Length: 322
Image 1 (cartoon, rainbow, N blue to C red):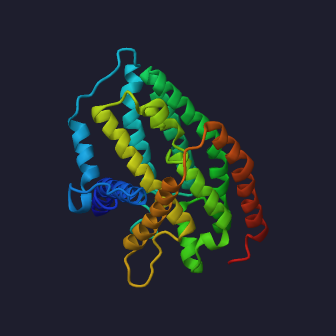
Image 2: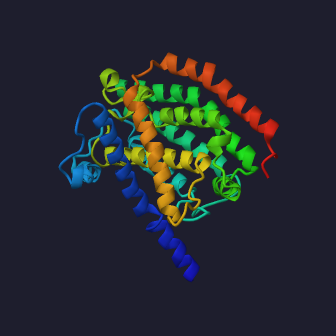
Image 3: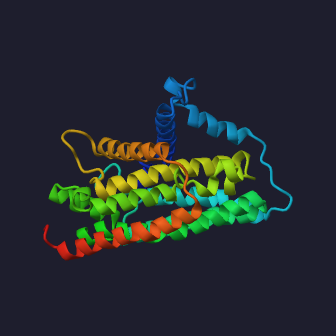
């Protein structure tokens, strides 16, 4: 009974749903402040200290807005896709060991499950655009599906590198392998880290890969017709996905929550995740948007060969670090 209660508290409070939601809002605030500073703007400023509560305020404001649905939209798809987006990303976040060496949900093969969930989130975005029955939304959905064709393969190959080195398909297992060797995977697989970071920028639809949501071309892409609670769910799902991408890079390449000195594991994990967020925010502030053809051809011509090269190097050297 006590173990069930402890699991429920972990799932709901820490490091569960409530903690993840607040961290997602915090990550959005960091991203907005970093990009604003680089662009010589202030960013969020008034709501809370230095505007730290602005993402939460935006979320509450959207919840209070009128929830509209186009007459020609597919009502089932239009209603279910925001819920599915939120639940998929939240489920994937339970696979990361944040407060200890093991995640809330951990099993051999959870890395493969994570890649599957990330694919479903993009397919859900494409479905949301199709279900909106709007030309802007449909174009955004098609772009999202096309973009997935470009980055999904190099992302999967690059994530296979850490799994091969640790001889484990579990995220917790890869983190424990790095802790047992006192070595971060980024030192062994820098090419895989570069490829994974670029692909996750595309997964997040962040500049220079914000093609499905290009405001200057197709309004808000596949999210154009969503408003109120549905848009709030999509927005918080995007923040959670930002946390997921940062956590994935921190876990597989920076050692995750392995202790550093006297710092608690959760502090170590968040510090590494925030570092990865700062890197991605810096990249999105420095680059301009690619065209969809440039994105796909670049991923296939350059990132796939680099990812394959990294895996080949790992396979040639696997077993040397015991």
